[in-house]
Image (cartoon, rainbow over all chains, first blue to last red):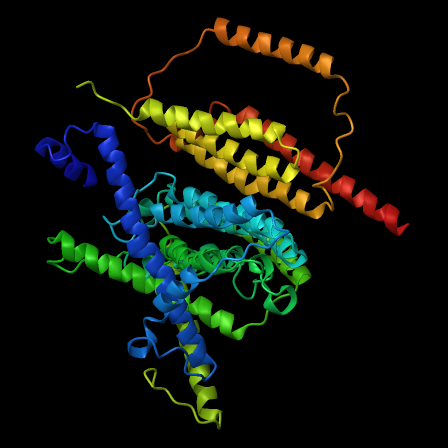
Length: 399
Length: 172
């Protein structure tokens, strides 16, 4: 699409005989900047606002509500404030590496967006290696965190960096194994290919494909939470023990970039989960929708974003309710529980695919029923406890 | 107007990144700087693989070397105290023999490159390579593949045995 547009510009002579490849390069850089500034940064920003409001609701507070209607411009104000602030670089810090670290972290995060599919047409590049590409690019983030921890020349930062590395290297193994269970079923690594093999209904999603993928979904979720340094696995920045971990010495715009990546990563994690297990952008084939590509892609994109934001809000909810785990608990969770279960899952899925290459309808329907009854029972208990609790609770989210 | 292509420009840029940061790995005194330069070397090599239309090798290069080996290297450096100011003890010893060895290796490398019968293939449009690689691994090359995995398993078991032994000595 971009190529056609640029070709037409070259044919018009608008670019004044500029070499074709240079025009392509400038066009791609422009489109990349547009995507980054118009979408990626905004997703992180809006997520910070949503997170603060959701926490406030959970903790019976009001939350930021002054800047703009209901405070929805709070994230812009915070971002501008941090950009204007003076940046202090500690005298003892290694200033070159101190400046390099936020770049590495941000590159690792933004390049992952290249392969995230929003609809059947709306994807920057449908890489043949999609999911492998995303997992390898997000590993750049941990290198950046380690550089930050070292360059700050501060005990807390160093411990934070080491914790981040140990945590991410460990949890990458169960995460990769559980992701591979889905790849065993699809036989492709492309994000679009994985989504195309699922359907719009929950019974066609890979989470309900077999008992093994059902367990695999939860393993992937926990492992990705740990890789994204989120509570209950936010040991690298543990405020109560390490001040702020690897970001202790950072201020101003560099600090902003670390938090941009942290909140943006929430979205990437949910997007991976939605793509692999929750049907991606699949929408029911309503007659008439398929004829108009614009409306079809719009519905698909809305479906995808709603599903991934449901995941993001679940992660916020976890952060607001669960305490932080200890380091030894973190490691034993990974190596003693998640890893063996992930191996069993992997072998089990291989066997399942061998026996029922087209999927086993009864198991899919039964698991869907199980999943939904779990959700219904959960809400029943929540409502039960709310009724029992004597405290006065208000349920107006706009107050 | 001759058609100007970005391909050689990008190639020389990638090559410059790779070689330049490889020099950085070898010549800096600070081992942490060496590790960071190694990251750029590995990424540059991944870029060269992409230019050779070897997408799978490139992604695995980033996944294994940057995401795994480099992180473990940084981890080890971070855990070693005062690693930044280790004095290099053999700074001037053996300078002449080292140049001799370097010259010999360099000569034989250049000689090998000049005389080898290179299998030159035109780089076409990138085609997905992963299916071909998977098929080759599980049909034609299954024996070397399984042998390599056995070697890795043995290395894993060896690492566990080595680290367990140390623990027992401490306790006993």
